[in-house]
Image (cartoon, rainbow, N blue to C red; front, side):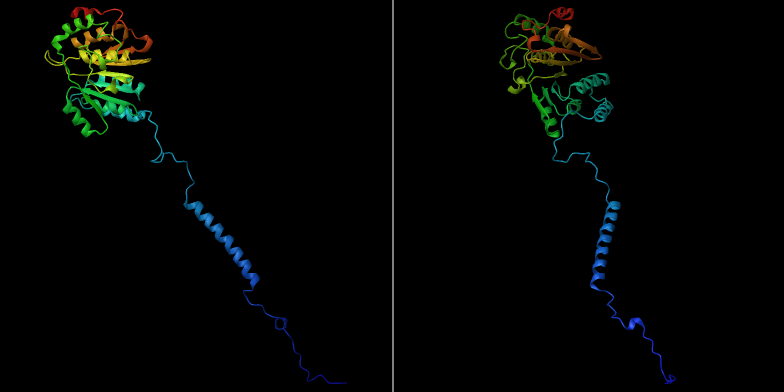
Length: 306
């Protein structure tokens, strides 16, 4: 029997018997890259969602997008009226100002013809945003001044040849020529009626005017140009426009020339309102226009003037 006293026990650890792989084997690198990629995508999505607001519809058109011309917004309209009414230097009374503005609120954008150029002119032009506004005035230098300071403003000068003191004479002459030179429906460009304004640019007579405001010429003294011509011309333009109706507003209606000529050419049956210094007539053109005379019944005021 052998002795085992000198025998030594040697224990082998399992790790010493196996191959120890490298810490970053190709398989582990692939898994790590895959996880890192998705972690990066998730983090990028999270940060983008926090820092970038949700896409909202564009409420304002781009500068190249055409903006429809439908008149000024109500708040802008009211603001213009408010600030225009604050200054009284040369302005028409507040009541008349607001009456004209209210009509333009209803009809704008439209074809607007105004006899007279003054402190309210820029207001009328603004309230008719998107329409066509034309001014007629006796002072060519005044028109040039306005056009220089307000690019795009359209104004034309006219030489009035009548005087306030000639009212009765002129009315009598028109009545004699009512079926010839001074007839209610005609192209004034070819008319020889003394009250007809025929020296404006040709295209003015071809426009179907929706609103005509008579606030000129000045007409405040016997020797100054009266508004006989502007009222007569407004009446003929309204009747000669073709189908449709024209609102004609006459300012300073309390004065003799304005009241008598309005009764003679715009007619009492067409008067829809008179408030303050302003009278409002609605004149119909086309088939509804009278061809043989201006009015069905002459007003007593017009007859008294003769």
